[in-house]
Length: 208
Image (cartoon, rainbow, N blue to C red; front, side, top):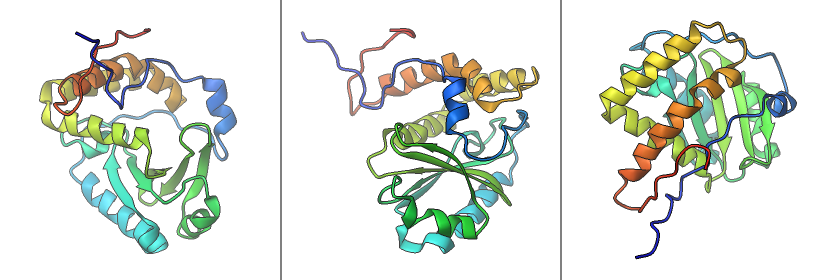
């Protein structure tokens, strides 16, 4: 028998290079990390964010998903809505950046080497808007991770407990905080991939 392939959404375990993140940051410092209990108002905040984005971009919005921890009922999270926006070409900033800026978004990160990823910040509602192209692997990963936590309470609670504990350490940079979550996040993705009936997956240990 041949080796079972890795899942098409699999990525190797690695930590973020904080110096490279600093180079990609365009505006404003990272805020201290705060994690709070789940807020029943977060879905409404996403709906408000969606209305603003769709009003600015119209049919240029190919998809707009509520992702991240605020999209998982019962999960402790930073009080910031995370959303994945898909446009025809996230690298073509002329087609969307100025219209988002006109309604209050600020371009915070530009990462052309990572699927032409862009990140905008908003204050009302407080949000991070991640922009991707239609073939983005990372956007599909975000949705798969969210859906797993929505349907697996034990993993949701373990993830929430770790996030709460880490926030108590007083991280001043969210990417440093994310690095400290990375091992558990990787292990949860391994569960997601192993459980997917549409694809075989050969489990990969962290570091391989």
